[in-house]
Image 1 (cartoon, one colour):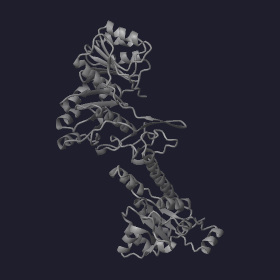
Image 2 (cartoon, one colour):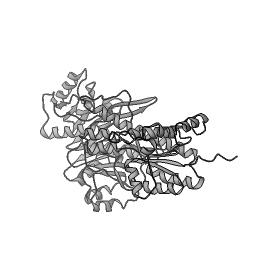
Image 3 (tube, helix red, strand yellow):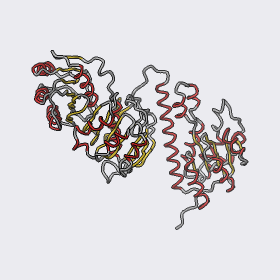
Image 4 (cartoon, one colour):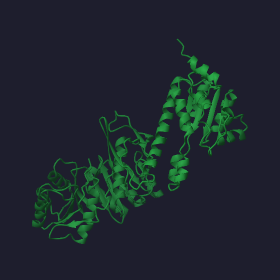
Amino acid sequence: MHSAAPPPIRRALLSVYDKTGIVDFAWALSERGVEIISTGGTARTLVDAGLPVREVSDVTGFPEMLDGRVKTLHPLVHGGLLARRDDADHMKQAQAHGIGMIDLLVVNLYPFEKTLADRPDDTAGIIEMIDIGGPAMVRSASKNAAHVTVVVDPADYATVLSELTAAGGVSTATRTKLAAKAFSHTSAYDALIADFLNRLGSDAPETFPPLLTLPLRRRLDLRYGENPHQAAALYADPLDKQKGAAAAEMLHGKELSFNNILDLDAAWSLVCDLPDPACAVIKHNTPCGAAADPNLAMALKLAFAGDPMSAFGGIVALNREVTAAAAAEAGSIFLEAIIAPDFHPAALSILKQRKNLRILRAGAVTPVRGGFDCKRVAGGMLVQERDDMGEDFRDLKVVTRRPPTDAEMRSLRFAWTIVRHVKSNAIVYAVGTVTAGIGAGQMSRVDAVRFGALKAVGSLDGSVLASDAFFPFRDGVDEAARSGVRAIIQPGGSKKDDEVIAAADEHGIAMVLTGRRHFRH
């Protein structure tokens, strides 16, 4: 049994802002005997190219008006897109009202997103880039995909022409796929507009709107997911202005996996929080070493030295251009990937000697601030404001008899910055601006203190300690004292804060409270 022939394309409406490839596409249609209808600038482009074109205003009998806001919103356009060719009553009504069928719609929308990015303060100009007629036609054609082909992406012109050449029309499967793509296109477009309008003219825009639509665009097919049997892809969110792993340029190496992206993001986010030249080594989405030093190569060496066993096969991030010396240092250890703002040509030459090493250029170093943090759960999604350090260091409160020395305070600030990036319950030991031991993901805080000390390669005598949340009992401080800790930074807020502070005083430990915890699950 032979499948039915695809519906022929006799008449097409072309109205595009992005005119990439449109002239060649229109010529190919015209040579196949397709009548072309067009609007405004698209029509002028096609006429200038010598194509026979009929203006939409000639079809509708109405001129474009209101500065182009109204041109295709007409029954003679939408009737031609929506009429079911297999419904005798539809066709009878169309004939009675002089509605000609439109078999192919080629539309891409006003550049709302680009205008918003290029001219964020031009409210009037941005609003003019809210396309009305385009999405309306796209939705009409997509609803009637059984009979009409809709194209919103110039990349699909070749597919349409190929099927026209081979079969005289576009297959049902392709029409359906193009319609789905078109609805996704208008959905993302509307999400960007909704976000803009939510923030427009309000001192306190609604943080969590009743309906949250994220206009995610597939950027990259990944090697695999968390495990090799899981397929995965990376989607970019145009509403998230942060830069990092999702936007980084891959310069070298194997395809990225799901875990690579997670770890690269964690590593990059950490080093962006450190003002001095710094390196972070990430394993299984949590730091196993971090260091800051005026010499980037030394920062890298010190970050590895904190836990060299865990650093094997890790992800590295640096917050300065990678020098040849830093690249040589990195070359002494097996790594999965390295991400940095940029790479000196000599550094790239060294790193590229390792065939499989993934090298990513992230561009400007900008601390990750604002936006949503989303976590998928069965049946829904948890959405929260992204955790950032805010003003953690503005109102530090010394609560012990001995205040920290200047050197200890500098080290405490460093440790507190790192602990925010460690899986909870989290403890970070630091000596100067180098991590000395990290206790991550423990079910009890005192075990996190013990585990961090266990991971320490060298002596912790004179070190400082950061805890991402309060100590529920004094036992954590007692354990820290046994390891030689001299200063502690933590949020405070426990019912037993008095006992915890008293324990610190007994051991001669300086303690500072931030008033803010940083759980990371």
